[in-house]
Length: 178
Ligand code: IMP
Ligand code: MG
Image (cartoon, rainbow, N blue to C red):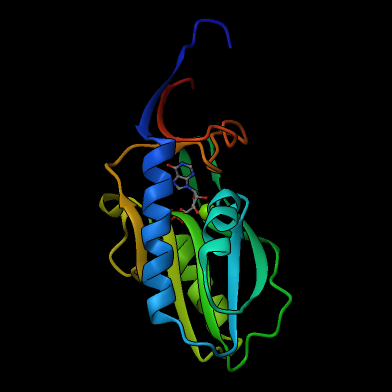
């Protein structure tokens, strides 16, 4: 738009992302046994993270995805829309949710209650980014966190601003615009 400048600053480089995701996969490998495991990617933001994380996991699992939407531009709309539900039966299974970022925690809270109702044996969360300053009091905490970030809106590596910037190979802060 005329007169508005959007500024992008690299926050987490591609190389640092890669190293940390390898570490995370080792942590997960150490704690997941070969049982019935379902890994659920939260679309669309977590798709890049899911694609880099899961080939490094050394146990067998079923992969699924769920699509939610809550954000409009820089601010949470405050309610979660379920766009596509996971289809694999998770009853009695160990479930790992793969998320891009936990911000207010509303999405995680929604996922916890939505998926708990399907009676999984366990429900754990792995998020690439955590923005704990924005958290609401009563939301659950993620079990695995790639990076704790400062209270900034970020894009790249799957995360978007108005559906753009998902293709950046690194995580960046974004400011300006409307
Ligand atoms: P929450 O419900 O407020 O925790 O937000 C969760 C969802 O909003 C995340 O899964 C992201 O898809 C999106 N989101 C939150 N913060 C950001 C951000 O800084 N950049 C891009 N998307 C974000
Ligand atoms: Mg998300």
